Image 1 (cartoon, rainbow, N blue to C red):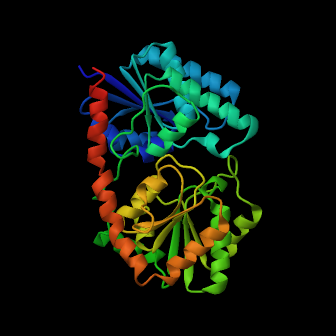
Image 2 (image 1 turned 60 degrees about the vertical axis):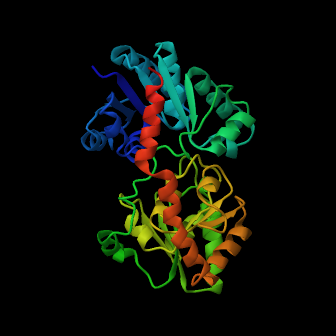
Image 3 (image 1 turned 90 degrees about the horizontal axis):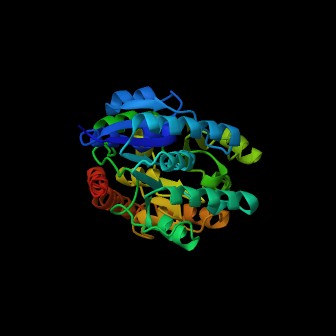
Amino acid sequence: MKRKLLRITTISDSLFGLLKGQLNFFNHYYDVVGVASGNKYLTSVALREGVRVIDVPMKREINLLFDIQSLIILIALFIKERPYIVHTNTPKASLLSMIAAWITRVPNRIYTVTGLRFETTTGTLRYVLMIMERITCWCATKVIPEGEGVKRTLLAEKITNKTLHVILNGNINGIDIEYFQRSRGVILSADIFMSDSFTYIFVGRLVKDKGINELIHAFVRLYQRYSGIRLLLVGSFDSKLDPLEENTYQLIHNHEAISFVGFQEDVRPCFAAADVLTFPSYREGFPNVVLQAGAMGLPAIVTDISGCNEIIEDGVNGKIIKPKDETLLYETMKWFYEHKDREVLSMAKQARPMVVSRYEQNKVWEALLKEYQSLE
C-alpha cells in the first residue's frame, strides 16, 4: 500500500499552474492528494493529474478569523487522512498546513520556500510576515529554499536554523522543454499576437511588486523616441492585494503601442510573438516565467533578485538590472532595441540551451523523489 502524500497550495490556481505534471509523476510512488482553496481549478487538476483533490477554504491575505477556521479544517483533514508527508507551497497554505501538521504529528512536514514577501515590506507588516515565516519553518521537519537567493535570505534574516539545500539548480517544477518550444503549432497560434514592431513582453500578475509601474513608464518614454516598438502584457490585475498607480492603469488600457491581452491559458504563442522578456520584479523565489521565456528562445531583462539572477547570466542570455530603477530599465530596453540585429540575436540563441541544460523537468522531479525516499 502506497504512503499518502498531501501537496498543498493556498489557491487552486497555484496547484494547477505551479505543479503541472508533478502530482501525476509522484502518484506512481505515493497516494497523492492535492489540497487547495476554491473549485476553480481543482477539477482540472484531478482530471489532468489523476489524483484526488480536496477543497479547503483559505485566503491569501491575512484574515485572523478566517485563518483560524482554515487551520481547524486542516487539522481535521490531517486527522482523517493520516498523511505520511505534507508538502506545501505558497505562504498562507504553508503557514496553516505546517502548524496543523505539527499539531497532528504528521511525521514528514516539508515546506518549499518561494518568494519572501517581507523583502518588499516595511514596519509592522514586515515584522508580522517574518514571524509567520519563522513559525512555518519551525513547524516543518524539512525546509527547501526554491533557489540559492531564497536560501541566502533565510539565513541572513535568521528565519530558520535548519539545514537548507536547494533541489538541483532550483525551481519548484522545472521546465517542460518539449512543451515550451517553437513548434509549428505554436508559431501558427502566435499569428494573432504578431506585430512588425520590436516586441517587449511581460507575463505575470500586473501588480506593483512585479515592477509594472516602472515598466509602463519606461516603455512610454522609449516609445516617444522609437515608434517601432510594442509592449505585450499577458496577465491579470490584483487591485486588492497590490494595486498599480491609476496613471499606469490608464496607459495600459489606452496607449496605442501597449497590447494588453489578459490572462492566457497557453502563453507559448505570446512568447513566440515577442523579442525580449521584460521582467522588472521586486522579489521572486524562482520565476517560472523567466524559464519559460528562455525555453522559447527569448533573452530577458530581469532585476538582480533571487531566482532571476540565477537563471540569467548578464550579457549572455539577457541583462540584469537593479530593481525599482525606472531610468536603468529604460536604458536597458533602449539598448535591446538598438542592438536587436546582432547582440540580442546572440542572446536569443543562448537562451534555450541554458534552460534545457539546467532545469529540465524530469530531472527536478527525480531529485525531489530522492528527497522523499530519504525520509524512509
